[in-house]
Image (cartoon, rainbow, N blue to C red):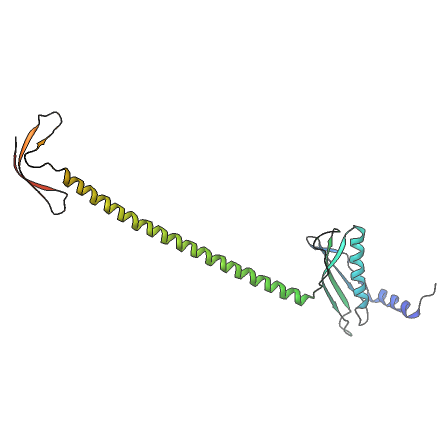
Length: 205
């Protein structure tokens, strides 16, 4: 088999410069990451290696590879080699999460995370506001119940005072006393202004 000189040179250059593809690394539930670096300026080789490694990993386990994010960087002369980084999910066939991939770059992922954080903070503030409103409503109900209880107590006290005034003996009526003979009252009973006491002017026989 003949190997093209350019391809042979690329293989030799990769071996000397350190072309490499990392192992598949777990990065969360059913989520993994793989990276690759090449030589020269183009990241095409690194892209191919990362996707190939991810597909191979899933195929051996009977899973489906679903890309999540992909970041490729071109090589910079005398500074850095071309590289690629792929984050993917390994899902079972038929999993509802398997759909047309919408691969995003790191900047988009960071923006989405920031938006998600803002939404969570807003939801927390709304929940706090609802809790404070509920506490305020309970306090208002408690105060209302206390006011009603005070009114009922005042009405009950007034009714008791009225009943007490009605039960006072009239002049000339007998006053029953336990263990003693019945006596006759003659005179005048003058209730006080408060209705809680009275002044008696007369005789008891």
